[in-house]
Structure formats: C-alpha cells, structure tokens
Length: 367
Ligand SMILES: *Cc1c(COP(=O)(O)O)cnc(C)c1O
Image (cartoon, rainbow, N blue to C red):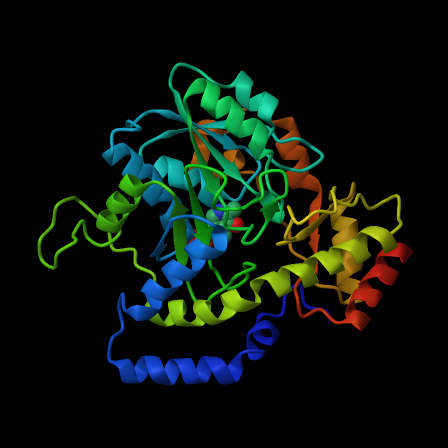
C-alpha cells in the first residue's frame, strides 16, 4: 500500500534532532512565547522576504487575525465585501466570515484551479474592500494581474499561503507571503512546512498591521495583565516553533523533490481518461498536492484502492455547498462544482521512493 502521504516517514528524518530539541525545550522551563518563537519569526520573515512574521496558533487564525486587525485599524469595516475564490478549502472563507466580513465567491481559471482575475473584476462593487487569494495546491495565483486590479480599485490583497510555502513568483522575484498586503500560513503537519501539531503565521511588510496582530493574538495585551483590546489567545507554540526552525532548513530541498515527482507524473502518465494538472515548469508551484481530474471518480478511486495507491480528494464538497454556509447554497458556480466533482489527489511527498513513483505511474497508465 502506497500512502497518500507518510507523515511518520517525513518526520523520522529528523528524529534525533527533534529529540535533542525537545530536551532543550524541557530544560529551558520556558514554554510559551520564548526564544524559539522569536527565532522562527525572524527566520520565516527572512525566508519569505518580508519585514515581519508573527507566529500564531494555526492557519485559520492567521487569516482571521489579518482581517480583524484591518478592521481594528479602520482599513476594513464589518460588513465589507471580500472577494474569495469559490474553489478552496473552507478555512479561507471562514476567516472572512469570522471577522464579520462578507465573502463574495468568484470562479477559478479552469487551467490553474486558481481565482480568475477577469472574474474578480466582474464582482467588484462599491462595497468591495479586499481580495483574498489562495495559492491552491501550491501554485501561485495570477498575482501580477490581481495586484494591478487591486491597486486600481484601492483594495487590500491578502494571500492564503497555507499550501504554498516557498513558491516563487519568477516575474516578481518574490515568494508566497510577500506578494500582497499580508499573508496567512498554516504549518499543519501535512503542509509543505509542517509542525508536529497545529501552528501558523502571518507575514507582512505592514508595521501597523504587525502591531495590531501582536496585540490581538495575545489577549489584546502587550504588557502582562494590561489589556488594550478585545483579543484572543492564538500563539505559536514554543515547541512547534523549535521543530519548525529545524524543518525550515529543508523546505527548499523538499519542494524541489516534490517538483521532480510532479515532472515525472506529468511526463510519464499518458492516459486520456486522466487529465493532468497545468504546470509552467517554474518554481511558482510547490506541489502541495498533485491533482488530476477524471470523469468517473468513483470508478477511478475504486481502481486506486484495488491497486493499493493512496489518494485524497481536495475537496469533495465546495464551500458554498456545505451545510455551514447555507446562505450561499443557491449560488451558481459551475466551474467550481465541476472541479469538486472530478478531482483526485495522487500520492505526493518528498519521501516517496522511486519504486513507489514507478508503481503509481504504471498503474495509472493501465487504468
Ligand atoms: C490548511 C489550510 C488552511 C488552514 O490551516 P489550519 O492550520 O488547519 O487552520 C487554510 N487555507 C488553506 C488553503 C489550507 O490548505
């Protein structure tokens, strides 16, 4: 059985170093917001090329805190419209709703699965104040075009970079997290940079935003027991930060390994029943997942099960069709619905072996 992703194998590469780091963490006697968090914030800002990084508890909080902080700063108001990709993980949408803003669902470009700039333009109203882009599956959205639209209409741009750690825009010579006003990252264990538990971060070059998030994510307080704002508790865990400081050193190599696997899939899978994803060959894609489309998904996934090939579906139900988002159920989003009904993610991780890759390719060519 080839696992969709073998998290144990990914992390066992660092077993000795994790253990040493745990011991040093234990002995430090300092378990919340210590030097590992500060160090990670410095390291990750440097990696992304931004001035600032703030560690938070998870990716959803990272995005929600960005929106809440812009409201606190007066750059957004409760009830403002935020353009969002209809085709995404529900967390992107929840961050907008949880901050008291209104998501406006926009269809993707079918080729890249990412939000369509021309569809964004069609959905801008007098109430639109921001665009949330998601670099879905690890491939950067059309940021140059989107930034241009935003600048013209005076809108904020926020990146959901939870699937795109290390993706590089070759045209802008910048990384995910540094292509907008502010970005939210998740370090959920299966992400390209994954902790051993929940973790997240915000990256930005906006000093005011940083100061507000620093307050809001820690009880609205900068001085112990003095509370300036109605905040929440969403801190990056010290132990997770220490693990992330180590793993960040291997992120680029892991992304290179993912791209190499994707290139083999793209060149060696030849089956008219399996539609392969678009990839321009550059470092703008870090292949968080490798997503194919098929007409008969039930038949295809049954075949994968018989062949012992792990898979996942990202995602089986579109956000606007979830029970939780009932007010949006009547929206007509045929491209999004078509994608959600036909996608299947193949095994993808930096620890897949040559033999496993060959087995997968052979099985898919025989389907
Ligand atoms: C994983 C993910 C999130 C949420 O991250 P958590 O750390 O699980 O809160 C948000 N958006 C996208 C696109 C994701 O893939």
